[in-house]
Length: 183
Length: 30
Image (cartoon, rainbow over all chains, first blue to last red; front, side, top):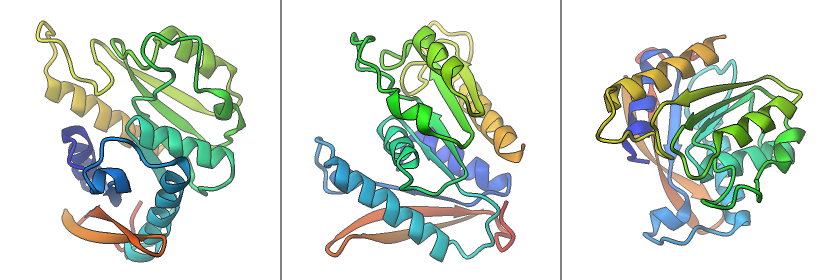
């Protein structure tokens, strides 16, 4: 919830006219390292969705679910199963596979999704081989977009040798997200 | 921009922290 990119995006989206609600999963809330069960993760997303609709205090034209790594894949599985009625998905680092296990991809449910999706992927992300991701996206029937972050890892952090600044990367991610949401 | 910390009920016993970040004029949110 206090990840620098997530905070930057929340503030930037507010400046662009979008309300956001960021949250912790229970395991993070309680200081545990092991993620909650799938059922608890799903229940959390559902409760946060309802809370956002009831408490944001604004008229909503659309609701977009976004997530960094696990938060995004849980949301996408829920959308595929009809458990999260949102209008779009944005992935800030999709964990397509575990590091070194490119053949065991977490893509099966993506083919069941019929809302627009936006993927951000770092070229150094050990959880997301870019060629594999592009193959997956080519097989999707519905609208999907991909923004690659040159030199970015799973959190879009750059190597020390990078000529681009970390702030430039954050600005790019925010601008592309706003552009996609405005569309 | 308005920032507001909230407590979100999850099921019957659990709660998680959340933070709303809202535009200044958020009654007609995008």
